[in-house]
Length: 517
Image 1: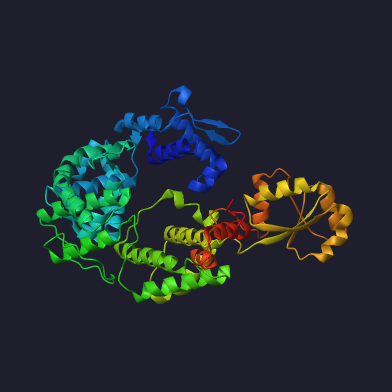
Image 2: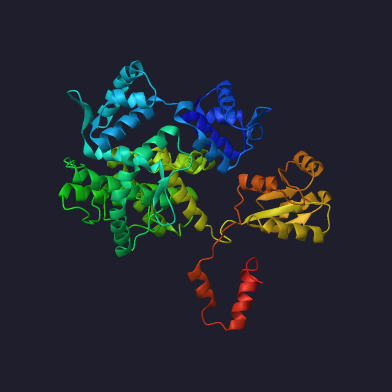
């Protein structure tokens, strides 16, 4: 039998194509022997020519996404081992849509014993308590879930978001890679959801259009689901009674007549991922966090931050949303951000340190996922802030090659980093180094590098025909990437003011010869 982790792991392996068992071990915190057994279980449900291969501690996938989805779709409930989380999900869905839950009957449907039911009840009680919910016993009927309506809806909406997709016309369909228990939930409750969605979809589309708003796919799906199940619950008399405390001010959309329901829906709207910058009202705690982050960035780069205003606005909008999301207690998680703290390690540590210094003061807590998004925002504007000619490294080349070869190398390197060759000489002309102001000496051979070292000079050895490792080596010693460099429009306009077309062309060729021909 397969379980939820098996299917999740198979999806990861398919997506990666080739991955080491060591990386899998670190990612899932499971031993390599456990992961191998998982692969062997999965392979029992795949034809031999599609089976995952393990060679030299690497796992190779022989299936594409379509084959993976086919594996999930063919798997029956009898071939699947549910975990406690999935069984609790089935109970909570039953209670949400059918009001009462006959656990005995439910466990029979998924072929589980009453002993398992009794063991699960303790975990169910703990899970309900976490969400400010509790089970009320109904004589000869089963149980009914009571408590925080907002928490109950959030749980159902998030679980449904993992089960359904939207087609090109925004119709709700089943996710192709659903587990057997997810397929059962979809089949059982989809008609109830669709009957409401047909009415609420129009409301959402009109609201977005009226307010010139555009949300990403995950947010739109969540919004459709949340409004549909909220409408259903309100019609059945299950209204939100508690107000979410500490919320900042948000735009009002008046989606429900009930004041608390309408306000809560406004919070949901404000928590979504919009494709444009959302303008939120002033909030002192959010402003304090953003000011601290921007100051840290400015101190770090030690140069003028030309993108400061845009960076501030983007950080403010995201952190304002974080405050709302954290009070609502949910997020749109993106697995692609899991490696941000290692890929952007320097920025991540800088952000984390700054946030730790201010979050207790402003009473906003950030998850690692949210810190990763903040890193991406800062990283994006630091790239936009890269100005041509602001960090030019002065280079001296030691080579026995001709000037033509040096000039070719110069043009090749300009594709990758910003620099200026201030001079070049042969190994027999080291005395020339004393006459030049330079940052780095570049050589093309280990022999010349060793001779320089003997004479007290450090150097960077590169391949004459550049490779990616050469560029990385230069970046590591302080060179600045030429990628996505910017010119300041106001400076260029000032230099060109009053000049003729011919004079402007001459100016561009002389002062910006790396950018204009």
